[in-house]
Length: 625
Image (tube, rainbow, N blue to C red):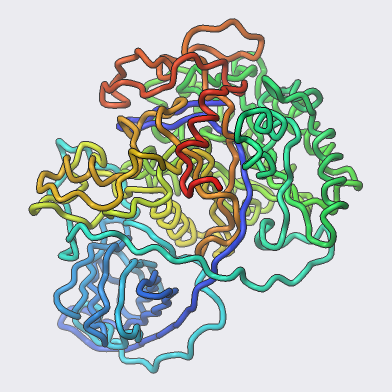
């Protein structure tokens, strides 16, 4: 398993999931114009694509520069209907006055070469009707084109998000940029829509979304543990992931109650597939044994060491063996989703300066080369899908972390045989507890003139939840050069935060810290806390296509399997004792010197933790029936 600190916020341990669907109507408008200013010819094209639901919308805009190179841009447009409002914008500084909307560039996307483009977007609300604006201007120059007919399919990259800028520490940051929409009104989320139509593909065909139209594999080991708990039968048939957290797990299971090896699971998946009729079956497998694994943590340290020929062993004894089993023709009808090395690449962005094991992982190239090797081996099989771990918003949501992570993902992908096409998508919140959506505030909310970014909880982050982070990350990855077919996964196994402590509306406080603390559904003491969090609940049940650009909500970390021991426990799995799993620990600089928030009496990571499972069911949101 694993944990992952980073300057200002941390992460957790990991495990598994599956998903089902909501499709939104899409409209598209384009505008083009050329004009001459005193200094340069400005020529622009703006595409406006809106996914909408009753009373809400998520909009993607692409700005293309057809004139001289720009070093700074301002987009202006007017909503045709006075009931249309921007509630949360990303990839620019958004403001609205009446029906007039203005967006100025961020530092990272202000330069547009001739022919260059950038993508921005916003979430908003509307009443009455929701016509697309047409009067776009770039730096005061109108882009007057003819609106296009609505597109027949959803935009690939819009869903709740905030601007993808990197981290600014509170002491050094400028005043926050906040749009006037700042009132602390609840964010509108898309209501569930019917699943998109699904056309069956020949078995083994590599499809865009392996979860669409598929049933999920039920792990018999986890299912038996869940069913043994009072009330556990309510979730015992939910699809959860198979973890391969050491070489021995390939043949005999990972830890605790997990006794089935990879071939055992795939054989069982074939049987479940045959029993399910014509629908394909998706089985999820976590690839998790890099040398110096979880270099910034102790609870989930791995067996392989860089200094002990770990990379060569990872390739020959781990990845080659896994790939060899998956390549067996009897498994060719299965959709095998692989979750690639949770916490590995994000550690290279935030923890190299603080942990020797991370320095070694970087200087040796073990993490990058190991992930590339895994992608090359697994992507080569048409029925295998690769999703690379991308941490979570409270790890990578700051300016100094976000774009460097995007750049590293691109560097890793372009170093593989298939390049950016070797990755089917990315997963966030693996085994963490960050809220899927904060319904009562967003990154543009202000309280008594102060941005919520100034609160201790948000701490100048550009994201407040996983939905906005995953969308912002996806948009940035596509802008960097990844195909717009990449899909996002969100692990929702422990981020429901229901129960009696869940707020039912926004706070009325005029103090920004009090407002955020009383309004947030994520009830952790600090967003950097990750281990066996007290008060957590099961989140959204796995389903495919839950929002535009999202392939699925999944349960990768099986609920009830510990993140780490709350005290030192001897074990033969290479797992140490991490004080962040100790409920008496008063914290460190990575979690603001707060209490760990961990549950007591926890076993070694991956082992069954009955008390945690019971609490996760009790606090599930949506509640269990």
